[in-house]
Image (cartoon, rainbow, N blue to C red):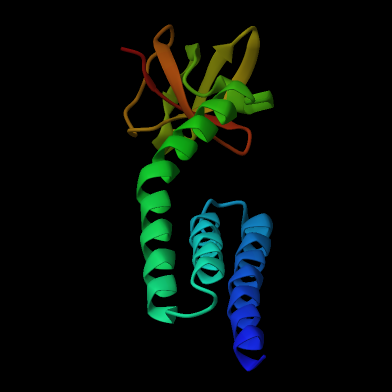
Length: 154
C-alpha cells in the first residue's frame, strides 16, 4: 500500500510541476518554460511506466526531453511566431522598412527634418546622425514617439 502512495506521489509531483510551468508560460508568453513542461510530462509518463521507482531515470528523462525540445523545437516555433508577427503588424509598425522622401533637410544637431510617407509629413531624424538633403529617398528604421528614424535608402 505504501508503495502505491509513493508511486502516485511521484506522478502527482511531475504533473503538478508541469502545470506550474505551464502557468508561468501562460503569464509570460515568452516560450521559456513550455519546454520544461514537456520534460515534466515525459518524466510523469516515465514515473507511470516505472511505477514511481527509479527517480534518477525520471530526472534524466526530464532533463533530456527538456533540452531536446528547447534546442530542436524552439527555433522552429520562434521562427513561425516571427512570421506571424510580421503578417499581423498594424498601425505605425507597418511603416518600418518602408521608403519615404525627405521634404525638409534632416539635421539631428539642429533638431530639424521632415519626410513624406504616403502623403503625410512626419518629423524625422537620421539613424546615423548624418545630414540628409531634401529629395533623398530614405528607409524608415524605427519610430520613436512621433519621429521617424531613417537612413538613406540603398
